[in-house]
Every structure is written in C-alpha cells, then in structure tokens.
Image (tube, rainbow, N blue to C red; front, side, top):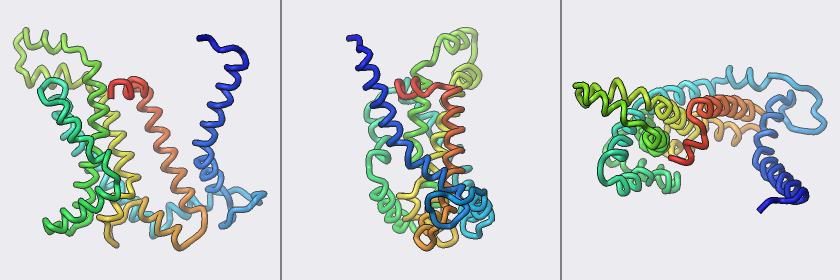
Length: 264
C-alpha cells in the first residue's frame, strides 16, 4: 500500500525521533569530551583536547589499554582459527542445528552469569593468571560473533571453482586453501572485527576474571568514574566510538551489513 504525503512525513519524523533517541547519548559523550572544565555545565566556556591528553598520559588507563590490546591480539586470531573449521562443518557437514545452538549459548546467557561460571571453572582448574583467564573466556564469548560472519560468507559461496579444481586433480586441502579460502576473506575480516570489538569492550565477563595487575579498559573506566567526575572517560569512549565507526565502515565496504544480517 502506497503512503500519502502525510504518511511519509510521519514515518520520516518517527525515524528521526528513534535515531535521535539512540544517538543522543553518544553525541553527548563526544560533546562532553571536548569540554575544558572538569564539571559539565552550560554554556560551555571553552573547548580543548585536555581530556584526550589526560587519557593517553594516564597511569591508570595506559596499562589497561596495553592489556586490552594484548588480549585482543590473541583473542582475534584464536577465535578465527576455531570459527573457520566450525563454519565449514556447519555449511557442509551434519548436525548444523545443534552445533549452531550450542555455539550461540554464550551470547544468549547473561554476561554476569557467564562471568561467574568462568570464574568458578578457572578456580576449580587452578588457573590463576588473569591474562590467561581473560583470553580463554573472551575467545569463547567472541566465537559466535565470528561464526556468524563466516556463515554469511559460506551462504554466498560459489562452490563451482572448488569443484573444478578437484576435477583437475587438486587435493581437497589444496583446493580449499587456494580456491575456497580466498572467497572467505570478507567473512574472515568481518569475524576479526566482531571479535576485536567484543574483546575490547566487554565488561560483564572481564570484571570477574581480571586482577589488580591486569585490567581492561572498561574496568579501568568503571574504577575512574567511581572515584572521579571528569571527562577523561568520555574522551576514552569517543576514541573507542571512532575506532568502532571505522571498523563498521570497513565492514560495510567489504561485505555489506545487510548481507551479513540476512545470511548470518
């Protein structure tokens, strides 16, 4: 049914209101991060990069930033190494339904419950190193996100080049590495981006597994706003938002978010 002019106007107004409601907190955080004063008040007297300098020079945030990047540097490739053969099995093997349901469990279960469960498991196993615990737990948590991206790539995969390579004498492994795997580059990139984002901004699981020597950025931000009231955390959030925006733009350019949502 075609909408009249009034219907189109109301629909556009509704979309503007919804998007404004969703984006207003992000816009406020970005605006707040450039406020020169430590307390927010209107009108803003001056704008500066003071709190960005504070963030990058902070003895509290810099160790957390290094730990977060170190964890992500391990979680991303490990997650892809597990997700790639799993996606292949789900696309071409049997038992896709139960396997997909089992692997999405960490996403369905609340993060607090997952964090407590990991804490109990690692205590029982005697794993006391916080970095090891965070890498294992976040890898398991990030696996379903990377798997969805690879499932989207497998859904649109053209198997004819692989079959042609097999007919010409290539072994299954060689055909996969030289013909099929290059077609999965978009899914691998999307899976890496999802794993990186989830590994860097997770709080509900990491807060149970970190210690005083190994803290991630979300934990450091929580501790800072508990004791201080200044825009340093807003500056950190703006930086992370910019990184996430760049990654989403790359993802849209390479694979397309609509395709990922439709096939994932």
